Length: 134
Image (cartoon, rainbow, N blue to C red; front, side, top):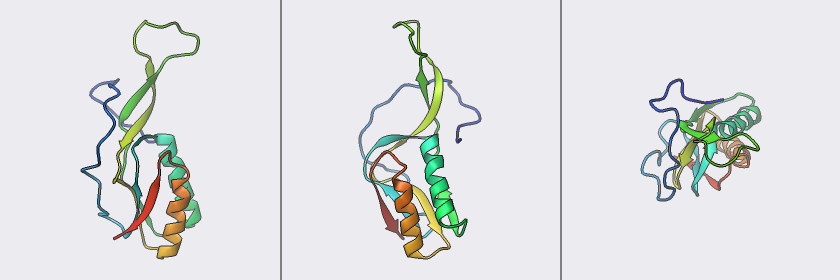
């Protein structure tokens, strides 16, 4: 799973959701991309599931770029623990995806195959996405 090697702080605040993306809005590396249409937290497991779908569908052909990285820690307390007693331990990492962010990019395969692969990957993600090309 994707996670940072080292962070400045072990735990973080939830932060505010909302607004449109100002970075990662254009295709930079490949010819085709998967762009978000909503905002959500995407976990490292979801990114990995989408990556596996893409690589399996394309039979490891072409090149894939993952433009997002989960660097926000999400904490969780154990079951049957009463309220209080501080914040829980870090459970997993997420990335905050905003509308308009390009999450995956592809190149080196034909458009129809890239479109099908990225649409299959979109099923694995918790937000609506659309296929875009350069």
